[in-house]
Length: 321
Ligand code: FPP
Ligand code: MG
Image (cartoon, rainbow, N blue to C red; front, side, top):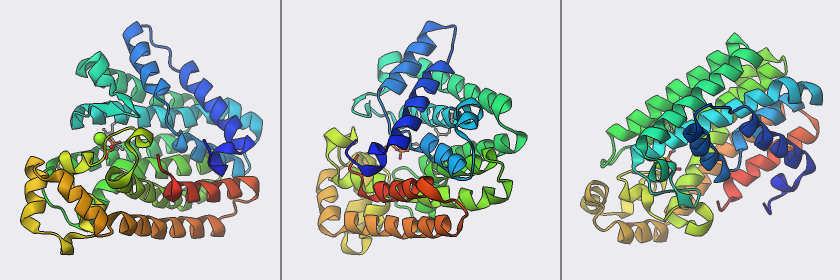
């Protein structure tokens, strides 16, 4: 993918196993579920959460055999939860596109999209019950609870100007929690339960930065690379960090009108960019990533996995997609 992290032989091998696992562990007897599920997988995706889980587990001493037989299903389960959440999110957001293609609900209908998401979520918990532990199930359930809370919090404030604290409460729920769970499960799967909280925090910081950059790309990304049009958040009535970071230079009435009605959204997107909202958002993301880096450096995780996780940290802020 043109970035060192994705070109590394270990990343490529873990990605290959993840892609195979995603399809192997999903075995619905109803064709439409398989069709919608494969549609969601085929759209691609960076598979960052399963990679994070696998790299943490391997870096903390899990063998390649353990990785393949016992830990890969947990990584696949995390991606199932992520995919389920996107299937649901696109229905909630009434999004037209996802990853550069028509969103699944636009192809299969809301019912099939939501229920396929339910099927994937249940498949994930099944994998955790067979290959994980009660503690790992607790970690992922906690993440999904926070995701749903984050989504509801966001939904309740659509069309409104929120403050930074609310913004981060939304982000920590909808995005950071699953990154946190992926890293924490990686530690648990390697038999390092004492490092669960440390890696949860590592994932949380990484997830926060990931969402900040996502929100920056919404204002300044290349729509072909990002897979969705510029300014979508504002048009959906969502006040995200780029906007919040330059509020002082904006007319509050204009901002409120754009959030509530979409009127003047394009003009406002350009203004936010001119005022440095995108740069400020990436700076804020870098702060989170520095914290993530410090956590990793004080952890006992060493070797090529540590280098790769550091390279993943760099990717999160440098990415253009
Ligand atoms: C995308 O956010 C949405 C999420 C990251 C999380 C969605 C979570 C849920 C629907 C709750 C959990 C549900 C299940 C079944 C596990 P966004 O709308 O900001 O990003 P986008 O621009 O990519 O759509
Ligand atoms: Mg969305």
